[in-house]
Length: 183
Image 1 (cartoon, rainbow, N blue to C red):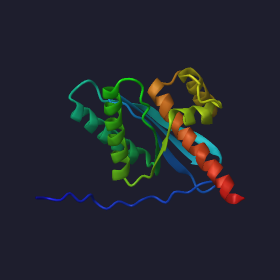
Image 2 (tube, one colour):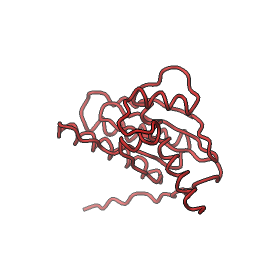
Image 3 (tube, one colour):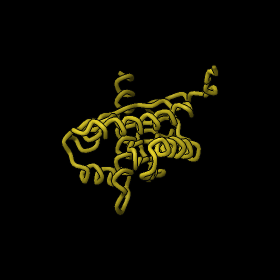
Image 4 (cartoon, rainbow, N blue to C red):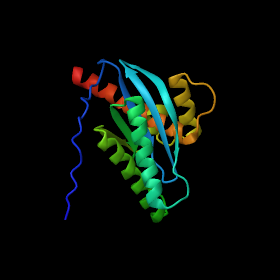
């Protein structure tokens, strides 16, 4: 019997507040489409770096999970992200869909962990509250606020806008933590 031992990874030091620039990868997990958004934070400013969607398609489910894992791994390496924020699973009525979403989320978390990134998790209502000021905001309102905060023009892909919103939520939570720590 062989035992799997993951390679050692260097966990980046996480800083809050006005430390040097850092990059956050926001992830909106999905078993067919996983949105991503990369932000660079410096002080209190958030700057757009990249966003898009990893298309996992309709093929065999293990292959889709591998696509998510490898796609996020490539993005982490390409953009030099040092931390990640991911949306928590929202369970509606369909248990099968919730399980698949949870597995896609697990593949995303494993991709981050395999690159030594700390991962923070936020519920959909917390993300909406952070950006719009109300936990019952709709997707159009969230996308609008993402564009306004980051100074982006044009339309964002829905999953990419959600991922950027998750990254912005994480940045806001870190700024609040820094303010509380400074008291």
